[in-house]
Each structure stands twice: as C-alpha cells, then as structure tokens.
Length: 395
Image (cartoon, rainbow, N blue to C red; front, side, top):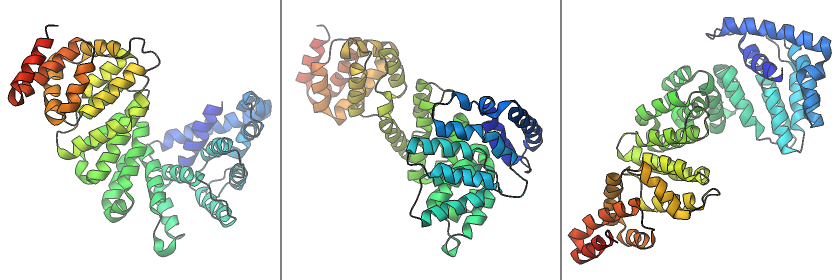
C-alpha cells in the first residue's frame, strides 16, 4: 500500500492537471488512489499504510498520516499540511531519518506545493538551518513543473539569475520524466544551458530511468556536451550500467569500448573506467575476466590499469588462487592475439614496467601471449633480449 501511495499520490497527483501524455491515465489512477485512501482511513490507517511494520517511531507516525496528507490536497492551492510536515521532517538531527522522511513527503509534492516548500527552506535558512535536502526538493520540482520552477526561482534571486546548482537539480528531475522536452528547452536557452551545464543534469536524470536511451544519446552528442561535459556524462553512464538492474557489468564495459575512437571519447572512457574501479574490486575470477575482455584491448587502456585490475581480481574475497586463478579465467575471455597486440603496445610505452610484471607473473596462456607481444617490440630494439624471452616460451 505504501508503494501505491508513493507512486500514485506523488507522481500521478502531481500531474493530474497537466497536459502531459499520461494525464488521462493519471486522472484515472489518481481517482482510484483517492478511493483507496478513504478505504484505508476507515479500515485503520496505521495498518493499511504499513506503518505498523516500520521500526522507527517517527517514520511510522509519518506513514500513518500519509493518506490524510494526500486528502488535504486541493487543486491550485498549496497543501499547508504537507508543507508543515516537511518542516517537521527537516527539524530532525538524525540525518538518515531526516533524508528518508523528507523523501517520502516529497513524493506528494505537486506544482502548487513547490513555491511554498521553497519559501519554507528560505525561512529555515534564515534561522541558520541550511539543508542539503533542498537539492532533492529541486529535483522533484523539476519532475513536476520545471518551467514553473524556473520562472518562480528567477523572482527569488538577484537579477533573476538562478544558482547553477539549482538549475542542475531541476534539470536532473526533468531528465527523469521528459528528457526530450528538457533537451529542447536547453537548445532554446543555450546560454543558460552552458552556464549551468544543464544538459549534463538532464542526462544524469535520464540515465536513472532509461540508461540505454540516455547512453545512446551521449555517444551521439559529444559536440553538444563539450569535452569536459562529455567525459562527465560518459562517467555517469558507465556508473548507471554498473548499478542498473537492467544491464550487466560486461554490457557496460562493452558500451565504453564501443564509443567512437577519437581523442575525446578515449579520454572520457579512460576517465570513466578508472573512476569506477572501487565498485569492481570484489568480482569473482570469471566475471572480472569477462569485464576486462571487453575493454582490455582498447587504445585508451594503459598498462597500469591492467596491473591494478589484476591485483583487485587476485585479492577479492572469493579469490582462492590469487593471480594464477584470475589469469587462468582471463585466458578464456581475452583472445591471445589481442593479448599479444596490447602487450606489444604496452612494452613500447612502458618497457620497464611491462618486463618487471612479466618476470614475476605465473606461467599461463595469457602470460605467454603477453611475452609474444613483448618479443615483437624487443626484436626491433634489443634482439638479444628478444631471443632470451623467446626461449622462456618453451619453459
């Protein structure tokens, strides 16, 4: 029931008066939700809302009054009860509970509620209470009334200039629900879009609801984003692929590898890969090998990244055979010809580091393929060393 209230009362009620394509369906579901809310109140709101199953008393009390807060909404007028509930939720020094309870209340916020909630934040700020939750509120405002939010906020700031962070947050929310309209607005207001990196905010939000569609747009619109913005969006996209339940890690790595082979894309891919290594440290051998095989042969992948990723895979919690186990798995995913080709390049770029690693590496098919790459380089620079390494292939 809580999920139904969250989904219908927040998003659907917010849009019930709009001309959004889902407006008719929203009205139907909103009517059903209103009837359900009345039924819940008659049958015992605390149990119906799920509040009885919540351990935290403050959150349980909030959930028990959820249906009542919904019923206090009136078209065209701010919900004063909701605004006061938001104020109460913010005045909580338990950061985790404050974020949770305020987030639940935000799901009920409609276009007509937003200016009053903004003014509430301004009042609290004047009392010396500044809250990071304003960012989440601005994101919600961008979901339900982005143009209205822009127009209103221009009246609240000197010279009508909305703070950059607020525009980004509004764009994030807008991107979650209607990225096409949001991008069109940014194209028509390019000065504002460039000042606040508005397109990046849109893409970040879009990735939360449609990672495949947003990723496709990023790859095709590097010029609109600029080098830095493009790199930032590629990073967001790779992160979305990693954490999205609708994609696989290897699919995210494959997307990185499929970016255009140009200077900006290579820099963005390298940045994104390195940025997300903290999330890939506990992969079992086979999954680590599968992910690496998608990107290991790319021109932007350097030898240090290979070494670092190998160390992570070899020391993961489930790694029971160290580097030997990882290289054995890697040999099943990374073709030997690609291993040789990449090590040939690495041995030209970082000869001392490459040789030092190969001298200590266990004997595996991957290692031997790497040595063949090294030999190709040494044949041009040090024939004697090339012969010595060639002899090791038979050992």
